[in-house]
Image 1 (cartoon, rainbow, N blue to C red):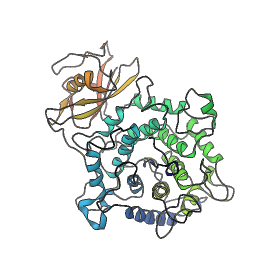
Image 2: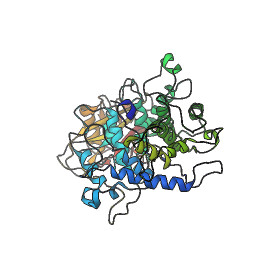
Image 3: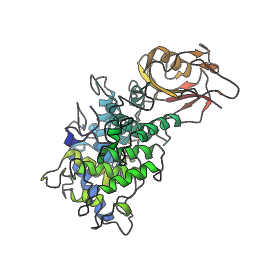
Image 4: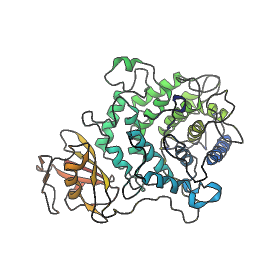
Length: 469
């Protein structure tokens, strides 16, 4: 099942990455900072009312866990969200416990399950690579790399899996704000996203690359917002031709008298929320310039008009008489300035840390590590490596050895030289060091340094190995 919208029978909206501050607006904006403050405050209040008595937002199947993304965008820490003030049941702790269970997400998971987990865990203040001793969501996503179609995660027919991989892997940074993945992997995903852009400048949930008929088809408002955000969070500037084309597509769908985008299912909060979040992630103000209609309306105006106050929930369609949980999540995230994920706010609860995460391996507990290998010639390969550590840390040599037989997808590592000891790698996958082109390693986005078998690897480390100068 793909990430989709409630009107398609299942909403799984995206989270918030890169916020565009909307507290100070240009003169052309029509929704005021005061109105936005009210929208955020009341919207947070409504989402708090969705919390179950046990503190949960997420359960089996589809759920309201996307609330974490909206909370983060609106400045509310998930650990501060409690049922009736019971801090033992705070939303973050309950969600982390769920993600740590062996039965999550299901007996037949798909890549978007893990991308959803990454985005929401990050927004909740849970390090997604260190959920528990056995749960590494980054490694879970890496396991869906398409070796035969590099740059895609999950079946390429479900293009949204690759868009949300870019959003999650680039958006869910380390606790210090460092990007986890290497540039070569980021570039591979960007290439695929560009190749799937339609002639009208937007995107759909399904693959268009190599299919002229699909590329000529009318794009979807929702996926255009997500895909343009995926480009921007991957480092593509908003002056890029692809982003400019996406903006032009969205502009062409504006309804003059309401500011709404006329989506595939008409004007609705979910589609508009995703589009505005895409603009936010790219640093494009949805309240002025191209998005101020001839009748003085903007997409933010439309979203504000969809909110019930003082209740704070958002209706899905303009004529609805009651709020929708998913529409309320999408609407709040967008008007709060959210893109498709944001670092968690600092909690107000006494003693509660901004981040939680596993601190070390647990000896004898099976786990996974995220690994990419770039030989400098044939492109990058990506895999999730299964191993069972024997101590609080392990080594690069142990990870590479495990990858020869326990990698998903297979073939990430086929041979390592030397095969023992702690010395520098001299050859990997048949590619030997040559002059200044030697094997180097980066962990969690750090600078590349000489790769040795003895290089220390900790729980949740995202490992990139490359051959080059």
